[in-house]
Amino acid sequence: MAKYDDFNDNSRDATFWDVIAWGTGSVAEQNQRLECTCPASADGAGYVTKYAYVISALDAQVDVDNDALSDLELLICLTKTVNSNPYDQAEWYRIMKYNRTDLTYVQRRVGGGTPVTLWSGTWTGPTGYLRIKVSGGTIYFYEETNLRYSESYALASTTCYIYIFGYGYTGFLGMDYFDNFQALGIAVAHYLAVSEILGAVDSAARSKAMRLTVSEILGMSDSALRTAHLAQTVSEVLGMRDGVETRKHVGRLGDLPDHYREGGA
Image (cartoon, rainbow, N blue to C red; front, side, top):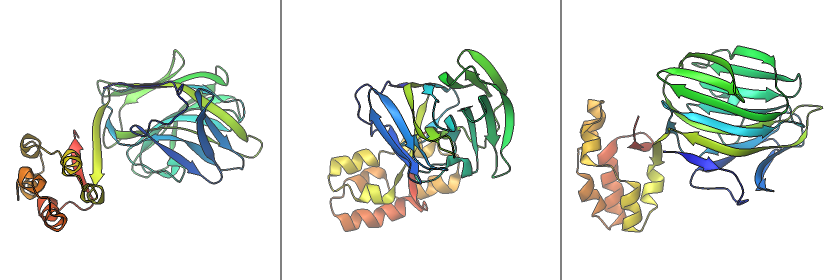
């Protein structure tokens, strides 16, 4: 699938994006762009995808204007946060314009280790676009048309969340913005919390939330997980209108700690 968002409607697409903000940072989709405001040092704000996506064929890019804040970033990460700096997550790649020193950085963090700078150099300027591409097991980082770095993909999974956000630092505060986001070659691979499923009192909504076909179950490589899901057929569970019975059988269906899987790995 492909996702395009030029922010021209001045309204967050809640089916694709969640807000990420920490400190006193805030984000607003207005003036036909995504404005990130950081009034204090160590503030941050932007968007993160609502769900994780398979990014083994990703081609993502976004326009940036980094005149005020410390940096604007395009980042992919195995995990999701909506109220803290993604830098503190365990596994990610990022490319960013870095206004403090007029540089562009490409960095990686794997397994919760020390973040590593893969490339840094003088930026083309505060405006332009950042791009991350994954193809054939290799990840590529571009600043506009300039290939800055590439390597064999090193994260533990190709199922990732996509972030676009700004960060503030003393002397580099105010508002910067993103525009014209696109992500090509992504496939849905998101998780639905059991509480979300059980909260769907409408049987059709519950059915949609729990759409897990027999072929998907049989395609699971983890035999224990496959056995758990086959404890009772999905059609039997979805046919139940009694919330108590549904809750009981959802438990039997999955033995999953927190989530049901929907989509690819």
